[in-house]
Length: 93
Image: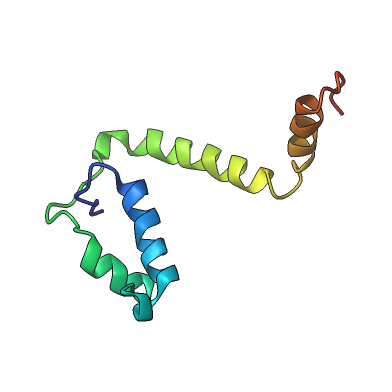
C-alpha cells in the first residue's frame, strides 16, 4: 500500500473534489484522477503489514465488514434507535 505524502490527507481530498466541482473552465480539473495527479503526492516507499499481525488484521476486517454491512442491512434498526435516543425517546426498540 502506498500512502499520501500529506499531513492532512482528508483536507487534500476535499480540495481535490472542490477543484473537480469547479471544472476546467474555472481553473479546476475535469476528473478526480487529473486533480489528484496534480495536487497530491504518493509515497515512493510502500507500507507493508507485519506478517505476524495478519491474524489480528483478519479478525479486525471481519468485524469491520459486519459493522459496515449491518448499518445498511439487517441491523438498520440500530440507526433508527440512535435517532430515537437523540430525539429524546427513552426506550430503545
